[in-house]
Structures are given as structure tokens and as C-alpha cells.
Length: 360
Ligand SMILES: NC(=O)c1ccc[n+]([C@@H]2O[C@H](COP(=O)([O-])OP(=O)(O)OC[C@H]3O[C@@H](n4cnc5c(N)ncnc54)[C@H](OP(=O)(O)O)[C@@H]3O)[C@@H](O)[C@H]2O)c1
Image 1 (cartoon, protein in one colour):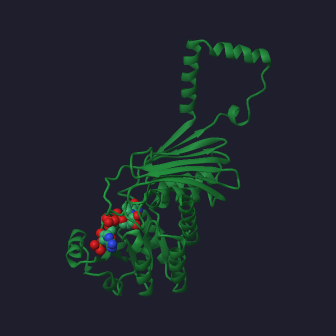
Image 2 (tube, helix red, strand yellow; image 1 turned 180 degrees about the horizontal axis):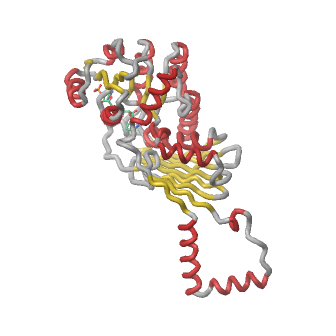
Image 3 (cartoon, rainbow, N blue to C red; image 1 turned 60 degrees about the horizontal axis):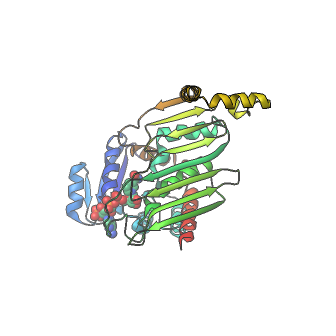
């Protein structure tokens, strides 16, 4: 494979623009070709990003022999046909999230990629953020002990438009657009759950405009997750262990900072046994408002002291991190990423299917 990797992009929408900007920051990547359903849009995009080749349909782009890998930036309901088109033309693929409409589609695409020995990856850009990687490492190293909870939410309001990809069927809804990040984060940090409980609220187009789910794990962990198209939420993620907690700041999927709070040993090893009279004395002290406010200040001070904040904003718009992973895999002859493996993509789609099954 040539030193410079040549990318083709299918679709000219919002995410294609962002990804193209991300690619422009990589000296070993070349935005080689753009494919649109119409020539004028392709030419406009091509002009904007100084792209060598513009194609007026997707079928022509995948025939370009100089393209090393295709990024699929079309709506979810087209992912299967666009992935199959690329793979059948012999092109490795990076396909936007959610990978497919359901697990069956994901299996079909991945089976073909494996048969043809072509690289394939779901574009779950969050996993490649340097701070998400650091949080994963610190959890795996046991920095906050045994994990008990993951809480995360994803929401900002989207103006209602029944024709937009957010509200139209198939493919619309909060779970597909946002819940997928929550599920992918839970899989990345905690692995596969053993059960799920979910509820959703539906809008007039029938998509889940708001949905929540709780994942249970065999190791005694729980993930409490919710997403919405209707309002802002905290957009933070908190991982709670028995020796501390980690908070990924808003937006957790493209974090600029995270904080680690270590619980004092007295909390984690159990409070020493007090006599009855000691307990009564402490309770009496707590009734005093001056002592109460002192204790609150002391608690906040100790919490602050126990918290380490790591501030390190992602470079650029952050989309280049997943592109770097793709290019590394291509150069190493790897057919999939170890950070976003294909079997996990299928599993995540299976759990999305299970969640949706509970709604009907
Ligand atoms: N990773 C992220 O941060 C992120 C953010 C937003 C979206 N996404 C994902 O990226 C995908 C695209 O989202 P987007 O926001 O970029 O959507 P978008 O702005 O609507 O763009 C989608 C593009 O796909 C092409 N297309 C092909 N068939 C289409 C159809 N039937 N209807 C509409 N467009 C069609 C169009 O390009 P042409 O007209 O040029 O063919 C269109 O511009 C979705 O899977 C979404 O979940 C990911």
C-alpha cells in the first residue's frame, strides 16, 4: 500500500464535511474522491476540499482503482447497500454509526468483508479519542477499584422535521443517533451485559424521541443510560468504582477533560466501629448548624483534594483519530480494529435489537 492513503467518501452531508476536515489534518492521508447522488453537489464538495475526483453516483466512485478505502457517510438505512457496493468492488470500508439498522444486516456486511478479506470498521469515533483511551486504561488498571456503575446520557434538542434522519423511519430516533454511543461506551468499558431493561417515549413519526435503558452485568455492575432528541442533558459519563470515580466531561464522546476522584481509605475499607456514646456525641455535634456548615466545607475540601483533573482537548475536530486507526490497520494488513472489533459491532447491534424489542 502506498505511503499516502487515498480516501473516497460516499455522501456529502454534515458528517462527510466534518470527516473531510479531519482528514485534511493528516499528512499521510489524501482525500481523493467524493461520490454524491448528483454531480453539482459532488463538484461543490470537491471544490471545497480540493478533491481530485468527483463522481455523480456512488457506483462510479467505487470503481476508481486509486481509492484505498471508502468512508460511508450516508444515512443509516443506506449503510448496508453502500457497504456491500464498496466491498463487492474490492474496497475496504469505514462506515458511519450506527453501523446498520439491525444485527442481521451487520452480520451480512461483516461476513462479506471477511470473505473478501477487506478491512471493515464502524466509525465509532468516540473510542479513538485520546482521553477515552486513557479512561479505559485507568479503569483496566484498577485505579478506581471494582466498577459498580456507569451512568451516561446524551441529549440536545433537534428541531422537529418529519423528513430528517432524526425523526424519519427507518433509522431515526434517539437510540440510533445517541443511545448507540452510550451502548458502545458501556461495551468498551464494561464488556457485554447479561440483561437489559428499557423504556421509550415515541413522537408522531413513531421513532423513540427519548429512551432509557439499564444494563446488568454478571460481575455485579450496572449501566444507567438515556438519550433524547428533545433537550440538553448533562452529556457526561461517570464510572463509579468501589475505590473512586471517573467523570468524563461534556461532551463525553469527544471529551476535553476527565477527573478521577479517589475515595479516602476510611470509606473504602469501612468505617471503624464506634461505641454507642461516640455515635451519640457525633450525632449531637451534627445538629449544630455551625458544625454542619464546617463539615460540608471540609467534605468539599477533601473531595477537591482527592480529585485529579486531566485537561487535554482533542486536536482539531477529532474525526482524524478514527482515520489514523483505519490507516494503521491498512498499513499493517489488519482486517479489523482491535479498538472497535467487528464482533463487538455485531453484539452492539444485537443489544439495540433487544432494546427495541422491549418497546413493542
Ligand atoms: N460520528 C458522528 O459524530 C456523526 C455525526 C452525525 C451523523 N453521523 C452519522 O452519519 C450518517 C450521516 O449523517 P449526516 O448527519 O451526515 O446526514 P446528512 O447530513 O443528511 O447527509 C447524508 C448524506 O447521505 C447522502 N444520501 C444518500 N441517500 C440519501 C437519502 N436517502 N437521504 C438523505 N441523504 C442521502 C447525501 O449525500 P449526496 O446527496 O451527496 O449523495 C447526504 O448529504 C448517519 O449514519 C449518522 O448517524 C455521525
